[in-house]
Image (cartoon, rainbow, N blue to C red; front, side, top):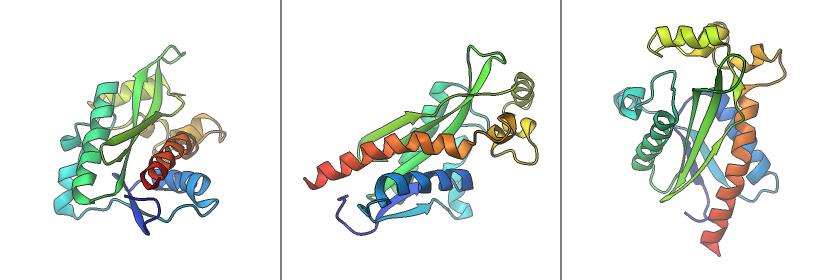
Length: 195
C-alpha cells in the first residue's frame, strides 16, 4: 500500500460506534487535518455467515477479557482475519480488558490497540481507568460473559467511564488519545513506503 494511492482502506474488527468515532477523531487529527491522506475508513461489517469466523470464540476473547495474553491474542487473530478479507488494508483491532492494579478497587479497565499493515504491527495501550470491585466481581460470576461495564451502567454499558468520572472522561476520549500516536507511527510507515 502506498500513501499516494487513492482510497487506501482502513478496516476495524468491530462495529462499535465508540471505536468508530475514536478512529475518526484520530484520523482527522493525524491524516486529514492537512489533507495528507485519502483513507477510505469503513467499519468491518460481515454477513452473518462470516461473523462466526471473527466472533469472540474464534478470537479467543470473551465479552469481558482479562489478562494480557488473552487480549493480545484477540487483537492478533482479529487483524489476521481482516487481512484475509481485505487485501492491502490497514487492519485495526481494539479490545478493552480488565487487569489487576495497585488501586483502591484492585482493578482497572484498559484498552489495547493493534494496527497491522502488511507484516508490521503498531500497538498501544490506553491510560488505565479504575473500575469498581463489585462490578468486576459480578462480571466474574457470569464467567465474563457480561462485562463489568454492564454492572456499572446498565443504561449505557458501552462507556462506564462517563458515569464513573461524572462526565469528565469518556472511553472514546481515551481510545482517541491512544490512537493518535499509533497513527503518527502509521503515517511514518506509509510515508517510508513511498520514499
